[in-house]
Length: 512
Ligand SMILES: Nc1ncnc2c1ncn2[C@@H]1O[C@H](COP(=O)(O)OP(=O)(O)OP(=O)(O)O)[C@@H](O)[C@H]1O
Ligand SMILES: [Mg+2]
Image (cartoon, rainbow, N blue to C red; front, side):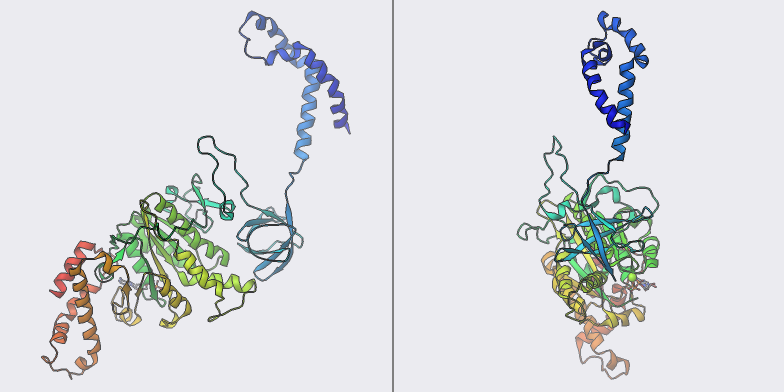
């Protein structure tokens, strides 16, 4: 009870002090150089013994202690239910997609995202394990409130709900780094610069403002450069079952492409593969101009979704800077599966093969963010791997992906098993932008090679049993003669780069 008394006592003291220039004189610094101030100087030295000063000191000390006792007024909700993957919070109002956290008794915290609501209750999806959350635990919002305006830039526009959501590091500071889905470093190379940040969802580009696909992108893989030429800003799917060489092919593209920056999203794959991809497939020279976002299979579904969105946000930032980005997402199927996990947990009914409808809405929403920017901006050329389990091309995710992507490269297990790498099935694969960006001669050459290749495959069995009479089909005769040459052209070693000019030269030599 001494504090209030001190405060009351202090008021007359304040009035007294204000009337007393002796106590206040030392702080008026402007005229201190004058003789008058020199005369006042001895008083300054007397200060510690000044009774008024001592009272003020002790009063301010008491105030300081009181301030430390004050708890800031923060709106908090409470956790009322935790079942399976979902937590239910009440007493707090937050938008869908908003981030919040639950402080734990041991000092840690669980971060979560609002994924739905039910009446007054929010449905929260935790980002990590929920061990330690107790009934009635407090929930705090992590939304960014209005920031102070900066004089030279004006107020940052935060009109959309997403702009007030959490921001994650993007930009040049990430080059050569490996981060998790929340932008935390995984590579022990020190903290990530948070100077430039962006929310997870970018701004939608007006489709009429997008630059068209007009230039080729050299991916450093002969079969793709020559037969399935990729355009800057094109989005392709890499369709394959497990173990047929997706990661190796993506790694080759990352190392040999002429793109300025490579952003790799490793989503939902085995944790062991992350290290393997970075150390063996990407290698130090690939990593130097790459950013790797890793959200392996053991992280929560929410983090896997976030990882894919974060990798896209990083690529979007580089595109804004005018760079040509190669975005590699391994895999789109695991992204869809993470969305399925969340949608089913919040009660959405499953539709096609256990996938709820929201999954098929999320896929184009992710894919449409990549591609060319507005004119004058850079581009994001994207490769998404799509798992075709049991090499089933009719899988609903594969089907949906084929419809929303500008081309697909199919890897064939039979080719892989016979040691034909990269196991690209040139018959089934197509690049829908190719005829806009390549010359007539190039297209004709590619078509001819495809025809020869198919012709041989169709008659393979006949030839094998000796039932084919040379001379009866001139085209097949050429196909047989050129078979080894064509196969050698389509194959490429992991350590071999095949740039566009050489690829086209070799294509001409092969069919010539
Ligand atoms: N260009 C190549 N040259 C030689 N071998 C290759 C080539 N591409 C792939 N391979 C072989 O195929 C194996 C499997 O490749 P990879 O790991 O890329 O498959 P994946 O489709 O990513 O598999 P998963 O589905 O398990 O992720 C590699 O370990 C390698 O031995
Ligand atoms: Mg792989």
